[in-house]
Image 1 (cartoon, rainbow, N blue to C red):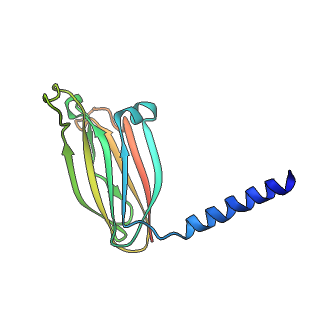
Image 2 (image 1 turned 180 degrees about the vertical axis):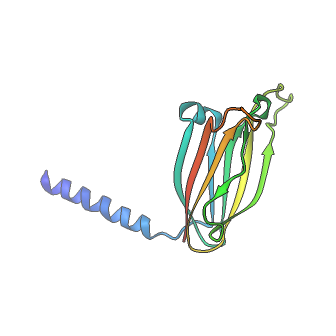
Image 3 (image 1 turned 45 degrees about the vertical axis):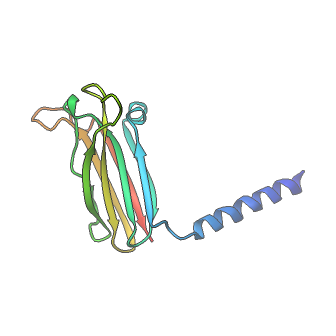
Length: 143
């Protein structure tokens, strides 16, 4: 019994080591729905991407509520650069009713090895409006 436990632990350790040695992906994608943000209003995480690779972040958005995702804040713009940001409306036949949430999609390019953090807040932009109702923070390790 004890030898089986040691064998299983050794296999797990070897698997983790091999996974850590894998090269970073050229393309990474992160996607969070409105349901995800209803469960946890402040989501954070970490991902890896290869130098010259791209990272796509897709977050639920519903501008009809008055809330908007603010501009993405990038801690080290020499490591990571935002190259695109757009709102994508939901598509269906027949067209969805007014007020149906869509998605905001950001695309980032990995410029060089290092680490940078992306922070984005979902707020009502007017003076006195609710700030940071939802937040998204992602640490990006570029290898």
